[in-house]
Length: 162
Image (cartoon, rainbow, N blue to C red; front, side, top):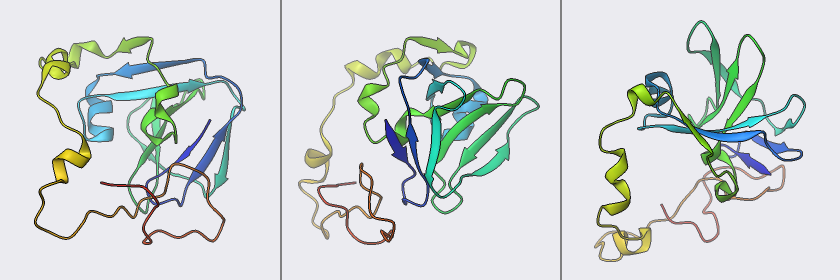
């Protein structure tokens, strides 16, 4: 498994299969990602290699440190200060479909409307922007694949919208 931040400054590789994937609803995780929950992929020691750049750190509590990209702000990992256990954010994986959650934590802070999300009316990104009377949407974020070392943010990524 490989992944990285939105701008491409930070890239990583995971050797082997993760321990598990969890969804955490606690308030600290909500704040860390600016969303209703976080999905974290727990790794064994030595499974992760930073292949481009190194993340910055924010000590978010007395028990944990968060890793993120200082340039684009992408949350990348949660590190347990006592055990050193590292969990990668599933959204930073190039193929997040491989990180299927098997457990939920921090459920005391789960927002009451989470269970209703699957029944909301929905549309694809393409449908959402199909009738825009503005310039086309072109993504400048790093593509979901490794790129040459000289790749820089700001040029359109192939096949990306939003």
